[in-house]
Amino acid sequence: MRRAYRRMARVTGLAGLALALCLAAAPANAACRLALALGLDVSGSVDDVEYRLQLGGVADALMASEVQAAMFAMPGAHVSLAVYQWGAEDQQNLLIGWTDLKSPEDVTRVAESLLAYEARFRDPYTALGAAMRYGAALLRERPECWQHTLDISGDGPSNAGPAPRDALTDPQSRITVNALVINPGSRDNVTKDLTYTKTLLEHYRTHVLRGPGAFAETARDFDDFKAAMTRKLLRELRPAALSLAPPVQ
Image (cartoon, rainbow, N blue to C red; front, side, top):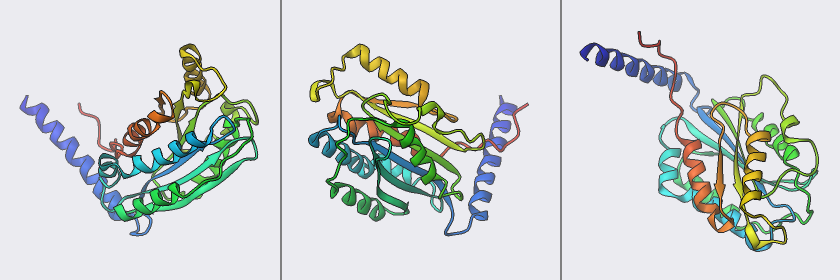
């Protein structure tokens, strides 16, 4: 038992030392541990009420105390955030350009900016693949960040543009793609019963998710979007465990 404890302590100490060395080696203005791009589906299936619930849900989730605790869990290694909305193949709109979140005040400014937006797309097509390519291009602008995560929210399957499974073809890509799958139920003119929701979730799991640890979160409807986004951000923002220590023998 004592031998096992000493081994565990040695591994923990080495991992902590490795983390400290990473932080010390990173330039003060470039210690970005995570680049997170949020892509929000605002195609024609999203009405004005759902649009407000979606942007307000992101803003509220970012302001949640538990989310900010995870966001600022590594002093000296910040999170960088970009937010865009998407619809048909040629419809992507950057809402928040890359913003380094180093303090609660930075998060507040982002949340207030999101709440101020009004425009959404009216085109009924849903181009998931094009949205993923747009998000990947954004993430390539932050090569200095240790992790790159693309976070796609949507309420329907891809029906235009490149297929999601073919959207990101670079074998050297470090991008992890997660999803938030929304079932708006009777809030629009598309019937989405329980069976359809399962199919939609499988659509995202099969064609959208990629990278180590990729996952899909679900929201029952747009009223549930804030809670689902909060859960997802908590998983994405928690610092990843370092695996630099030698294996225990």
